[in-house]
Length: 57
Image (cartoon, rainbow, N blue to C red; front, side):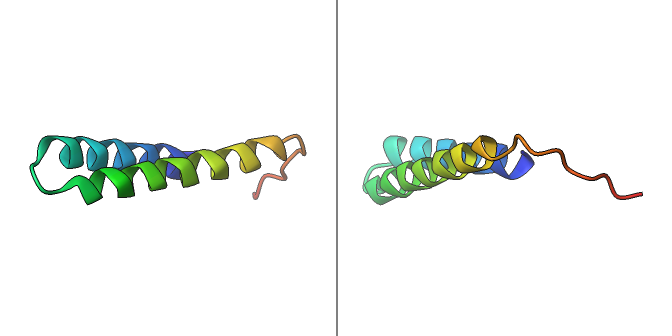
């Protein structure tokens, strides 16, 4: 879960910098790609999350 939130934060920061800074439009594109990849990862992970996980003791 923390990886998912971290990647969303990275995508948001890259998107803001890419939008605000003149000539850094490629950062906006990279941020969008990271966001799409992160949402795909999250969807796959949460879809198969119905199994009970064993706790390590």
